[in-house]
Image (cartoon, rainbow, N blue to C red):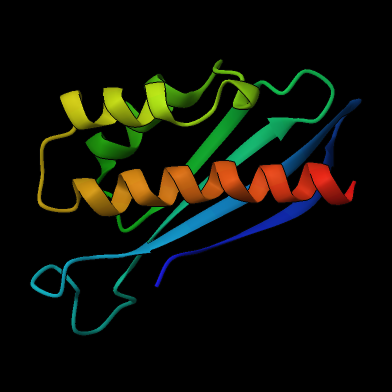
Length: 117
């Protein structure tokens, strides 16, 4: 089951929000001694909607660097689909679907945050 969360942060003079999307890894990839969940955290500037930071858990180092290249600088208002499509083209691995789902869930968390804020 996938889920997402959001939390507000103030970084210097910029107000940002951290939105988090989660998705389950395929059972064959789930580590025995760790969480079977991929987490993608996006830090979003609430004024501009620009993604200014990203962190991912259960994603190898090069995959995390690629996600940063793909995500940082995008505007969250554009929706997740172009970013997810680029991840599908460039991040080829068994956990790809979980990473894409976690990204989409983080975008959904931002939409929920905007409705409440």
